[in-house]
Image 1 (tube, each protein chain N blue to C red):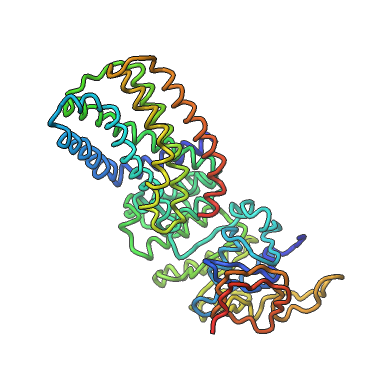
Image 2 (image 1 turned 120 degrees about the horizontal axis):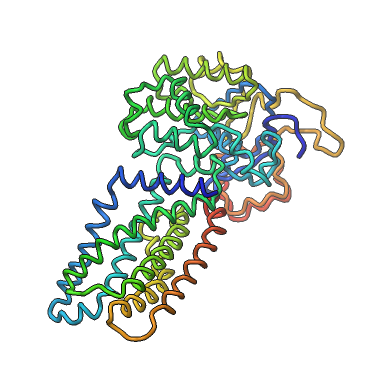
Length: 222
Length: 268
């Protein structure tokens, strides 16, 4: 099982390295969003600083939709999804492998985005323990939900437009929890941050369990 | 359904996009046979091969492949078949060698055996480090075949295996089919190149309009007690085909008693 998860994750990361879609298209898109928010709210730099965490996670979710779409579009092309079904690989292993690869890609993107918001929004990063924990949990949760809906998109016409409609509402709890925890880590609001991180952890577990169970029938129908 | 045949389909109906691509197929193929499936475009050849690979569910009838009931255990069949389809089943952005290694590892084949299969298909060394997207159709076909061959399948399902290949490649396919049969594997392939295909096959079946019209039974057996004595036509009695597009489908001689066709498009 672990060997198959690593096999799928390594393959997806290799594909991304070769195609450079993430670095060449998704990252510039995310940076552009960060920049546009700065233009829109620059009249009052205080608003930008106050809203840094929320704006950051909104951009991450938008970018996540693109990353998930890319991750599954390679499986849809040239009959590869059928080859995966014929391979005998456990659907749960395929799912977890894709979650792992999406998580790594999003973490790399988020590292660059944090630097961008620090510069453009004049935000001082801090509260590292809580911030890193929040980023990890929110990213895994996003990848877990994204991979579940990504395979649904394989069999839907107009999947490119449907995926955001399906995925973003499901990620609303991640957005709320991650924003609240990040705000506290950055010192924008007071109160304990770890309960929010724990909530994100709970979402991760639920999404991962649901995805592992649902991926088999969803892959069968794709 | 107990069966000693490698492929044993009885009155199988398979619906694809609301269209009955297989409208009552009865087919029996024994171990080690090399069977050509022929028929016009849209006859159901590809659907038949996909069904035998366990990739397509059946709406009605009984189907067993390699002794496994497709209704209940299709996934158990998949690892034991080698399917060559119209698609390449390859990742375009990975190199030939990376594709061979990945699909080998995914199916329990060692890296050495994956490379040996590339050698057997005479995939040139100079293209093995190129991404698949840069290959010609024929080169991709050879790599796809190599991936399928490496698995050493018990049942080969080849859809237009000669398509896109040069004459050397076509001869290689014929040799591979002969080797597979000699090693005890069963081969079922669809082709429009009838002269070449018929020289390779031991038997040919004809499929038209989703129904096998010729050669479906290699060894006719008397019906067991309680089994329908006649297989002429197709028995769809009791089958729910509501909402199914039946236009263009020849259902003459088909028993539709008790069949729910409400909402079905029966064509002109």
